[in-house]
Image (cartoon, rainbow, N blue to C red; front, side):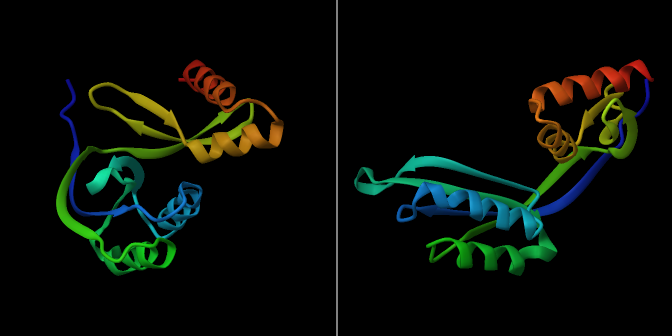
Length: 151
């Protein structure tokens, strides 16, 4: 069995509770956070004091992007404060590979632990689906068939 190769990094979590912003605005906030370098973003519905509906906006980012990500929170939301924690993340080492498919070249993430796994890059598949007018799921399924038939 191949020894696993793990990477460990120190990251920051950013979160804030928002109870005074229309939920339809969150799409733009999420896009801005990703464009600023956030590694992950999610929104979770919550109930605050006096049963006020609200949302937790969460982002994960690199330490060196602290000011940049904070700027996005304050510019694109109604929040007046953001909680920040330092965390450790351990992940399986991966590489990016480009494989030829019926749609042309597609970028995939490749890992070798616990066994070889490949996952197509979402943005590549989304672009193909949109340009060819076919469902995203179909593109992903066909890419994986093509990739595994050529291994």
